[in-house]
Length: 106
Length: 416
Image (cartoon, rainbow over all chains, first blue to last red):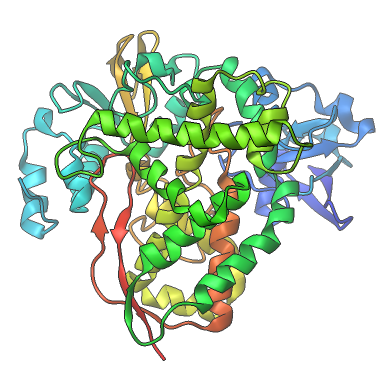
């Protein structure tokens, strides 16, 4: 289990309890966190679960995959800490994870 | 041959020898009679080979998950125009229109990235006010108590005004955009939109010349927020060849026109078939968030996308060979019972309405999807605010195409 905090573009926080093994995208969508769409259902094929990982969590969440890199290159307002959160798997090591959502998914 | 979607006809489709099942018949789509073909293929032969059709031999991919597998594998399934491009009808070799939708990485990626910011969330927020003003003006100008054509008065007018806004195109000439969009996707023939291929190409050259005029104005002026100015000043687009410029313009005109137009009509038509769903939305307009993607799924304004296999690969247990034409039937995947409950119905409060195939997936996913959703949302917000009681008076006439799934007209009347 991991407690994950999603901070919306306007500053609103949403804290959700996520089970190990599920994706961070799924944890957001199943808990109706606004600002994360996950249109492709976790196939890394739409870039609508774009988040910014807080710097202190970048090491724990790992690096982008090649496909993720390509899909993110088409998204808007990407930064060095941008990830597609369908590609981040929940584990105990991510308990306390904080991610921010962009002003819109594209 | 005329196909009518009757029960007996459905029976006939299920009785055909499997190797003769050929859904790629434009007349089927014109008659809205393609559904039984796809129902049968999803049930009996989800990845299906048709040896003989007016478009040559091709594979039909009909299930949601198989379509996802093709769409996300651009290394094997190519979009290259020189291999035939992105629709079942091979791109003509004598009049090439290079556009990024019909390219593979890495050139695709570079050109897409130039256009993408124009339809990103930040820029859309700036456009929203203008779109709403124009939608309001159109809705308030509609007649009350008399029949009119929804396609012409609302769907075409709104999407054309939108395009004119995006391009900063002379407003009084905006129906030229509609015409060029229709001409670009039509097949020339007697009695058709254009009679000959020569006429078709002449009209597209006229489009190129018109836009070249705009380009020349904008390239010599300070950069502005419109698409032509952005292309003229953009680092990786300002040296495009005239053919590339025309190709990408046509892509943006068709992409921003037909699809949204037909979803605007399709939504109204769907509500006439499922009036209880409209009442649910009317009682709770917040449901628009799920209604808009649901309309786009239900309509599926592009019935398919085509790929060409670059190497042998197995798909759904079938051996696809290098060079084969592979059709992803979005129109079928969006009605896949395994992924979507009661898929033939429009349901305004589905749990996961955004999981549909209409925008495609992977590197070629629709770049304007957010703009399309915004246009549809604004129109329906304004219809709901006015509580317009729009009555569909009869069946629409549909487009003769296996690619553009759309409407030529839809007779309606606003009560009151």
